Image (tube, rainbow, N blue to C red; front, side, top):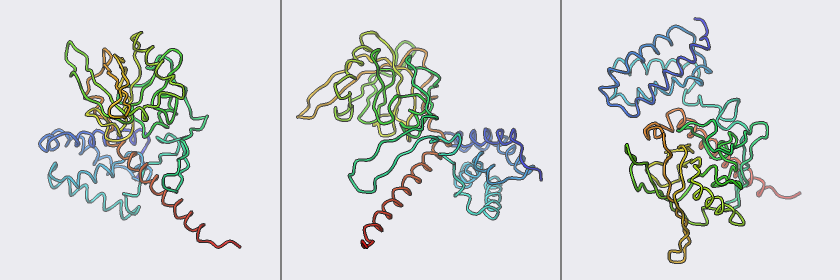
Length: 329
């Protein structure tokens, strides 16, 4: 059979993404009726061209078929049997297809240009993330830039590389004009008012002052005051570490432009807390669009990142142990 052309690879990638993301939220009756035409198109495409490892890595069709087989309650047995047959064929050709993973640090990868040295000693201060100068884009003053609600990154270093924030380790980005980007990385967020036709969504974010990090001289507090008094909107990103009904399940997500309504610093039994009230900007997309991320592909990349990070830590720990056991000559 002929190799798969690039336009067909792109088509198969789009169909695969649609199938995987639809399976996450739909019922069995919907999958068995509405998804079947798309599935049949994918099966016909796979039967018409030669499939190699790079096609699987790019389209992630093997992940889709594995999910179909593992969730056999969503589809008829002939569909799951077909998925199993193709997986067995590829496992025989290429080895275990679960080892065909995304290349995060390659060209176009989600972590391209980002790096960090992990120190294997527990509680040792970690070295900061760094981004190759050739890969970095600079943050825009207006905060909005070229980003869309739902844009997603593995961590702050990747967001810094793309110009969403101005510090790969910081909580928020500011200048003499005010705060242009705010990262809700830790703490708790509570929804005070749900969004409706007439009212904007309002939420309250609270964290320990030590987690907020307003700058060595408190510059961030002046920037926040400027935003609040002038009514300027700021770019808001939420992290998976945030305790909130709006937090992503993995990574870091851009959630749109928000207004800082008020903030306060309080002392509760000797612990200093920072509290901020936020309101979503006008003309925001529906929250459901935002909550679709991370999607299936982004979850793939997140799991691969955590696997690679764990492996790097284990390797460096083993190297340290071996060097400690080597006698000095």
